[in-house]
Length: 306
Image 1 (spheres, rainbow, N blue to C red):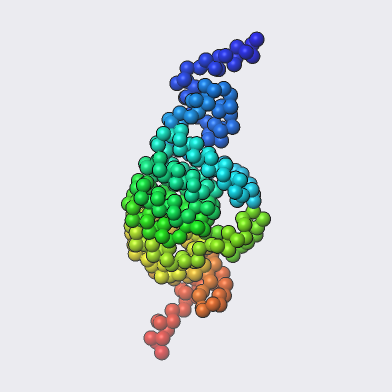
Image 2: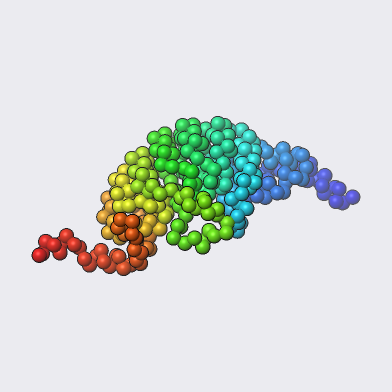
């Protein structure tokens, strides 16, 4: 009897009180708890007030790496969740942070949520230029984009986003650490790793020419050369943070000479390995060694003394 009364008391909560309680829950807690208590609770959980932000990143950060995350079945589940949230938001969704979604779900969101400001879809192997171009034209208020580890997205997307989203302040285009396969062995499909974009300079050129208002840029393990870095430093004068971790074709001198042009820059993350380009042959040396080489032996200066 006491248990029945307790259930009745919870079921009889005023909608605004119930909304206040439920609004304090995480997405994961919402999805696995109150939605399944009773129909009235499910109705509250679908209220558009709760769905201006859809952030699954805390769940992905806590979940161990697994091959299951890269499976078509898991992608379908993420797509279903994203589509549901889009419907519940009634067009008011402004922030999406998910992984392993597809063009299908993104296009659905784009058609219904034109006020999107944050889009983070890292590790989404089936997101292509097709859906991203659609986003560029329909979601012009974008301020932050994370397309890290999305190998089917090319420099064309960067061009379209840059041209159509003038408020973009944050771009994350990190790639996988191709030098250490042990970090992804057993869960990331080999064929996907092999498809990692190689056109670092082309992407850097697109960023430099079309994203003048960027303040934060992450391009870890990009294959760009000093030419690409020069394009970024010349075209993005408002940069405050630049992450070049793993960009092994950049020497300390390359970085120092180019970033000095960015007056607002506060922090640069440099690669700890330098692989000089010499035809098709690459010799790997510790970055500290090459920094010492660059600082102590200026070939042009020595030539002038001869």
